[in-house]
Image 1 (cartoon, rainbow, N blue to C red):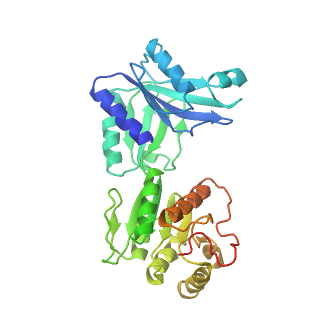
Image 2 (cartoon, rainbow, N blue to C red):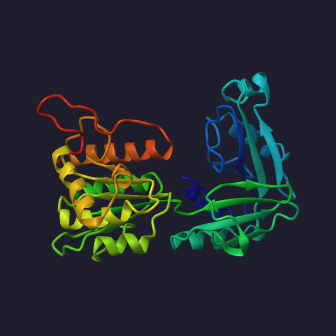
Image 3 (spheres, one colour):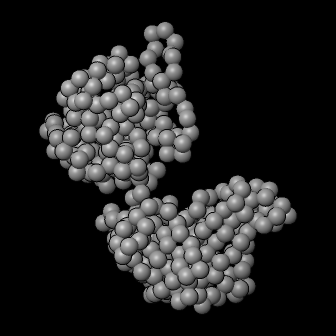
Length: 332
């Protein structure tokens, strides 16, 4: 969503419009949008993006039209301090939201940022609060923090942009197509691996590799922002991916298949690939939440729902006991 805002902003700048970009830098209590979310307001009050349910945006529009935001350099503002202000701006009572308002121009390096994001890169953007000048770098460059987190100091605002969450899907079948499409909508960078030539792949924006799954996982170097989901039903392929993914810091590793087949899979992985009980306990199989899913899009929904819960640390049982004759959600 925020990438779409930045693209809209670039169009406005190309048309010689003045634009102020607002970035959420801190929240206290309940807040409608997370830290790092952005909103942009054009000189005539036209808005792109969102940082609240609309009331803060309305205030920014009013201030723009009144000329109150003719900023020369970045400025920090707060909304929702105290119950009365929270009610006025539509925040939950007691909630507070802090915005960095940044006047955009050539010094903002927005065009360069969009070029790098278009290549699928992750980019660190450093905004100098004294001058408004922006410098771009790759995570970890120049001694910077490689973690995907916003950092605000008295001198600078540092934000991270690009594909912070990655999904590797093993298998190029119909279920993979639905899973990839839904994952793109949730801002995942998606890649599909299937060495079988008789499985075509045509989804734009999601590359396919015909390399072997274990090699692909190793090359991907999964981190705590990576998920690996095996969907081929072929143990020779799924197990190769899982054996490497379960040794990695990937936040989610799952495989399709019934509980009976999952038990056999765990036994194979333990016997032939020397995976210990701790690693095997990280395997989500049958993959996805038990929501009664039957069709490919329903199963894809159950997988992404479980991945989302894992991302936010919400403990939900993926495979509760099902009624007689019915296996857990993704048991195809």
